Amino acid sequence: MKKISRGIKKIFIKIIKLFDKWIITPITKLILLITDSFKNNGHGFEKILTNRQSLVIISLIAALLTFFLIDNKTTLVDNSAERLYGQKVKAIYNEEAYVVEGLPDTVDITLIGRKWDVYLAKQYPSDEVTVDLTGLSPGTHQVTLKYKESVSSVDYQLDNSNITVTIYEKMSENRELTSDIIHKDHLDTKLNIDSVTLNRGNVIIKGAAYKLKEVAAVKALVDVDKITRPTVGSTTLSDIPLIAYDATGNVVDVEIVPSTVEAVIKITSPSKVVPVRVIPEGAPEGKAVKTLTPSVNEVTIYGDETSLNEIDYLPVTIDVSNVTSNKTYTVNLTKPTGVREISVKTITVALTLDDIVSKEIGNIKIRTMNLENGYVVQALSEQYSSVSVIVNGSKSVIDSLDTTTITAYIDLTGLTEGEHEVPVKVTGEDTRLTYTSRVKTIKVKITK
Image 1: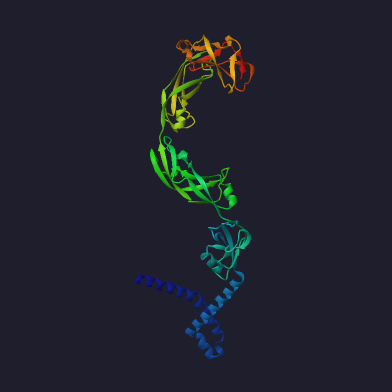
Image 2: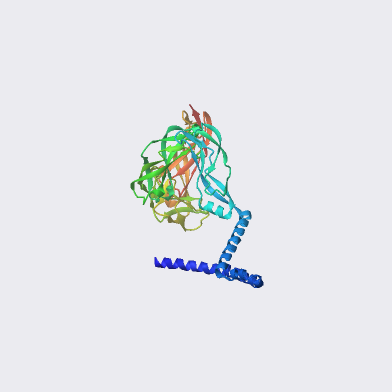
């Protein structure tokens, strides 16, 4: 306490010294000069002017007069203007019964007055613009925004204080609630969200009748980023926000009751081991592919269970066009649709070449594909029921070929009743070989 008292005392002493240096002393010197000029004009006048107490009083009076003169001058000419940005607008009305449109969220206010008054007004704003809609019926109305003026000497001017609002009766409807998962790509690639179970299936939406008609769906946005340390199992998320959307996916501004829900999220890690199948693309220069040996024969893939069930192997395509000698490829594995992770990212494939030979394999039955429902197809002659297939490739590969893996077929897509000449196509499971039908086209008849 004594230290504080000493500090205050020192401050006052400094102020007095400044006052004495810059006001009392200069004015005293001025008066002494005047005194010297009027020494012969009377002993009484000289006595007053040479008395220190009298000089202090006269100096104070002169200082006060100077202050008031400067203050009056400032009052007349030193006006300023400042703006208060983003002042919130609050409407007073029955929010349970009505919906109001046309109200701005915020407005700007211009303050005009003396600098000091404007400064005070900015330091003590009322922080709220109000509009009283009590008693107004549904419809369109012209209303005035009001701002509580904290400093009476300042002129407060609201930008666009007169606004037009539309009041609607608040309606309500029951809607089905579904869920969407956001930030799913942030989840560990080996994990999968198997299901989301909300704690309620319906919500109430409230708003103007025309707004309720726009709502096509109400969704709970389940944010993966809100899950703390996701692992296999079930986890519960609270305070999940609800959003209403129209048919084009735009957000519709309606009230949703409740505004948040709770969800139980089941996390799984489905996986499947599949073989790696190397598929050559193109043909070597005057040679045949003898072997395509990958560094790994199988990999583990992770994803949603439905997608994994549809995948029997992982295809790896190698461009062998114009290759003339043995070669080793480095390949980055590509994730099929629905697969989030592969146990191996990169493999090598060793290519060996051999001399090319041909072999004809007969009596390959012709199958039909893509025949429209309700139609029957038959070959116009017995010779069109099967074909011979010419196989080209390495001798060792052809000698070990299982002929049942060769398929000859005709594609009847878009064909209807009548006779048609269609091309014969041939495929085989061993992609190191090429397959060609000796008969290029056959004639068939389609009937109902």
